[in-house]
Amino acid sequence: MDLRPSIRGFVDSPGEVGVATSMMASSVPKVVAISLNRASSWWEGAENSVLLQDWIFHTLAALYGIVAAVALIQLIRIECRVPEYGWTTQKVFHSLNFLVNGVRSVVFVFRRDVQHIRPEVFQHVVLDFPSLAFFTTYTLLVLFWAEIYYQARAVSTDKLRPTFYTINAVVYTIQIAFWLLFWWKPIEPVVILSKLFLAGVSLFAALGFLLYGGRLLRIAENAMFTATTLVFCDAIRLFLMLQRFPVESRGRRKKLQEVGYVATICFLCFLVRCIMMCLNAFDKDADLDVLDHPILNLTYYLLVEILPSSLVLFILRKLPPKRGVTQYHPIH
Image (cartoon, rainbow, N blue to C red; front, side, top):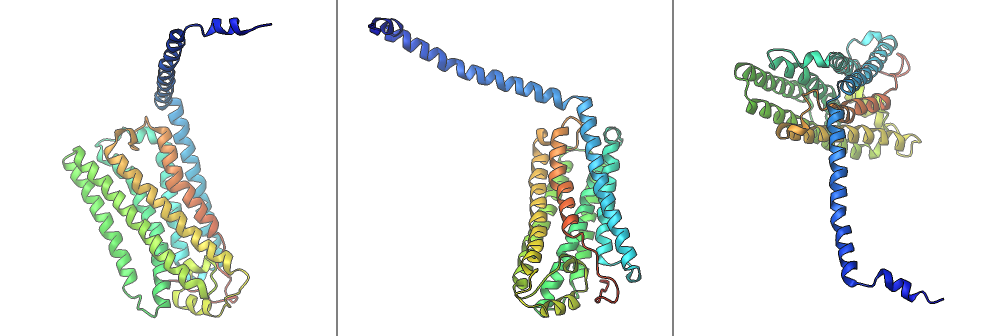
């Protein structure tokens, strides 16, 4: 049977084929536009849903509460293990973690009420103060890594801790000045400058982890590290102890990886925070201090605080050795 006439019937006119093709081509952008409009409408509806907002904020509150509870439990365990050494760096680290995550949990429980606090400056205080405490908590690790690095190079570390305290004092003072300025004159440029300042602080912390984390790993090529003693033991005794471990120790690679993990996690955490704070300052769609961006809040706080804190607490979960097993000294 000859099918050619039938086939020619479908494509008999080149003009009809061209018209059909152009109609199909013009309909594709329309379909895409309709799909994007529907997606945008769904997104706006979801963002403005009071039920979704409350669910996300309460979820964040629960996650922060869990991290705070873990930090508190670890603090209690450390105190029971070595109560005679007072406030060591390890205890301060876990205490600050408990403070930061505990305050965040309470804030998100009452997030809707926080949005209606007047004057508005107190909203910024409640929302931004935990960020400053988070900076102090994790730059404490940078401080100790710097101490170990300079001890290994036989360089005096007497000025490191005063420098750490001075940097934190300057950061808090400048941020408080922004709050007072906004209280006196609540204009948008002050808020933008405050957010850019917090972005700069986060970038400074990220570079600190990149610098001293990398330097410490290079020193560690001839020594053995344990994640717990790396962060929390006396720097001089730690370095002397590390020199006694052979390069081929079985746990060497694993412990070096732990140091690398902590440095990488914290670097990425503060880098993402820096980028988001810059977007937050200039783009209203990236504003984190409003109720109608719950999905953005969930993503942001998971990436820059909850997940990094959880991972670092897990990596540094080992308790210090009991007294008599090895020397364990507080850092003054």
